[in-house]
Amino acid sequence: MAGYVAAVQMECITGEIRENSTHIIRLLEQMKQKQPEVVLAVFPEMALYGYEKLEEISTRTSPSEIEENLKEIASVCQAQRLNAVVGAPYFGKTGLENALYFLNIQGVVQHVYSKMHLIETEKNVFVPGKSYGICQTPFGKIGFLICWDSAFPETGRTYAGAGVRLLAVSAAWENPYERQWELAVCGRSFDNDISVAASNCIGKSGGLRLAGQSMITDCLGNILAEKTDGREGFITADLDQMLTKEKRRGFGSQIEELKDEGEIKEDIRVFIGWKEGRK
Image (cartoon, rainbow, N blue to C red; front, side, top):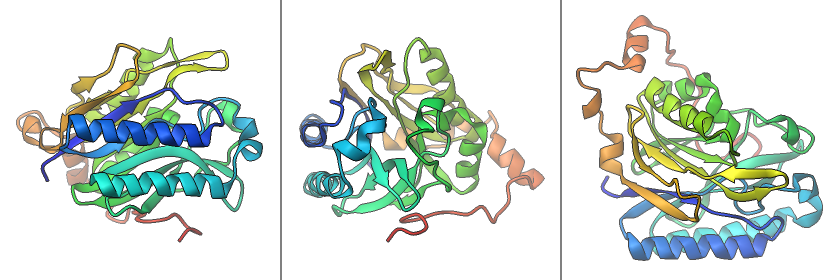
């Protein structure tokens, strides 16, 4: 499928759901004006709420407010003919979750993925997700990771074994750990013969400064596009260039070798649509 993928780098205002939603919509519209071929836009972790004062989420917002603003963003996705991955809280049955919402070109929430690997400061706020998130799209299967999830090799391996062609990574990764962010993104890409669109926040979060450095890779872990200026904006890459396996010819593929050795099982569970308990 012809088209481009975008990784969006933005600063969010903590707790201001409406303002952040309006900002996301504005960025989507500007993106389509500048590059009409964009078919998928990946936004940062907690883009709708902001990555600060997480313990106040339940008092600053509500499930209905999150749902209302996601619906509005989804309607813009439909009007602009693109898909979007947006980070926001999810009010689950067992507690609050740090989630990504996949808004499709039909203007609906097709999938919700919740972060499985929480950092220490998140463990008092969120409950971890319990399943990998895989979503079928016109350009193949997409897998989702949130920030620290990308630091675990088994996450990328599970997705690759399930036939995922593209990983959408949303983060609030801080400096001075930009090198580790690059290693996580490019490592999951190279290890698993898979392309990655990685979006990171900018700005301050409490005493932290968020690193930006959003990037898009090909299946060899090469960086096709990167935003290193620390400013808000977006980067894009051609889907055909990202998804082609031509660059792997003559180089070798860890995934193909493991398949030959029988180490990747055919019964890897694929979760399409809402997670268990979601409609």
